Amino acid sequence: MGARGRGQVIGDVTGRRGWRRALVTGGAGFVGSHLCARLLDDGTDVVCLDNLSTGTRGNVLELDRHRGFRFVRGDVTDEDVVRALPGPFDLVLHFACPASPVDYLRLPLETLDVGSTGTRNALELARRDGARFLLASTSEVYGDPLEHPQTEAYWGNVNPVGPRSVYDESKRFAEALVTAHRAVHGTDTAIVRIFNTYGPRMRTGDGRAVPTFVAQALDGTPLTVAGDGSQTRSLCYVDDTVDGVLALAASTETGPVNIGGGDEITMLELAQRVVELTGSRSRIRFVERPVDDPERRRPDTRLAAERLGWRPRVGWSEGLERTIGWFSQAAAAA
Image (tube, rainbow, N blue to C red; front, top):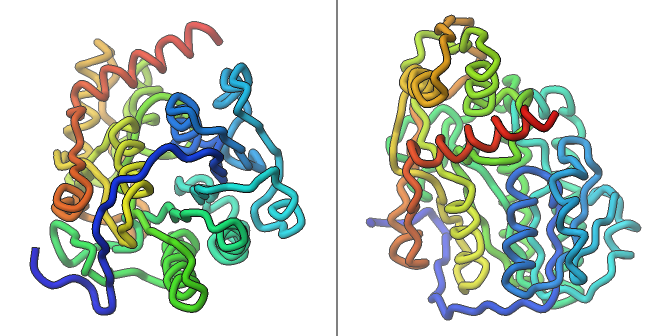
C-alpha cells in the first residue's frame, strides 16, 4: 500500500468479539440503529444513547423486545448524562452526530459540540471502564479530494470556513482528540472513516442522494440532480458498513481505516438507475450544485481488506433494490 500517514500506527488484528455490554451513541440514527441490532443479535447487551435531534425512536422501537437493550434519551455532550449511563461497558461506539447536509446546516453549533465535547465525554467513559472505543469519522475529512481514490494517508482538501465545514472540521477535530487521548491516557481507540452508506431507515428528507432519489421516484416527482450529475460517489450498503465497523472494533487496529464501497457511480447514473428499478415515470431535473460539493469520491479500502479481511459484499444494484423495497413498504404503511 505504500507509506501511511505521518505518525499513524497500525496494530495487528487479534480478532476479539463477544462484548458483554456496548454503548452506541447516536444509536437511534440510521447506521447506529443497525449497529444496535447487530450487536444484540451477537449476544451483546446494548445501551443506545440518542437525543433524537436527527435519529428517531422508531428506528430502535423493535429492539425493546430484547432484554439486553436499553434506550436512553440524552445528549452525549452532557457530562452528567454520560456518567450516569448504566455500564460498565467494554465497547463504546461513538456515532452521535448530524451526518447529512440538511441536518448539520440546521444544527451547526450542535454538530461542532458533539465532535468536541461529545467525543471527549465518550472517551472519558471508555477510559473509566477500560472499554474499546471507536470513533465514527467520515470521508468528509478528505473534503473535495485532490487524491483519487482516497487513502488513509491523504490529509484532505477541506475549506475550514465553508458551509460544510461544521461537519468536516468537527470530525477532523474528533480524530485529533481520539489520537491525543490514546497517546496521553493509553485509551484503547480506533477511528473508522465511513464513506457514503445507504439502506433501510434512511430519512427521505435528509438531503442525501439515495433517499432523495428513491422518495422522488416513488412519488412520481422529478429527481433533482445537482449540477450536471457528473460528480461521483462510492456507495456502500449499510450491512457491509456495519460489518466493517465491527471488524475494526474487534481488532487491535487504531486506524484510521476507510470503510466504503468500491463501485464508483455518477449521481446522474444513480438517478437513472433508481428510476429504472422503481419503474417510475419521473424525469430528471438538474438543480444548482451545493457549495464545496466534492467532485469525486472513492475510498481506497486495501487497508481494511489486508488488516480486517473486510470487503463489501452487496453491490449497489442489489443494495438499491433492497432499499427501494424498504421505502415502498414504509410508504404503504404510512
